[in-house]
Image (cartoon, rainbow, N blue to C red; front, side, top):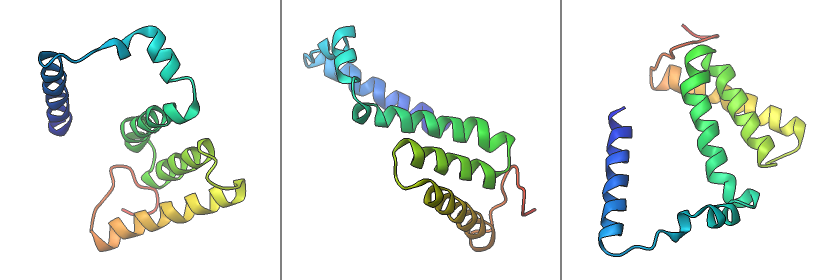
Amino acid sequence: FIVSVAIMGCSIAVLLNAIRVGADLKYLSPSRLKKNFASIESLAPTIVFCLLGIYVFIMAERIPFEIATFIFVTVTMIIFKAAKGVWVVTISAIYSLVIVLFFTYVVGTSFPVSYFYY
């Protein structure tokens, strides 16, 4: 929460500074926004932001961390066509398991909702 407030404060400060020095805000017009977000490449940051929001604020608090991580990585890899289907599932499962084992045994972290480890 504190980091989010700090980021919002910095964003507002940057916007106010830009306006003060004569920034052109025409890029915020509906026609320019539509043109800028017409391709999947320009939507990639928005897609990643939404996926991270769903992962952190919805899945991680309600379902086991291992499953939430698996779903997040799988969906992200499918959306961005990172690999073939079998490899997506394999990589996601291994990644999820390694992350959980690392944070459980090396870092000593416990997860809010855990399926395999207590």
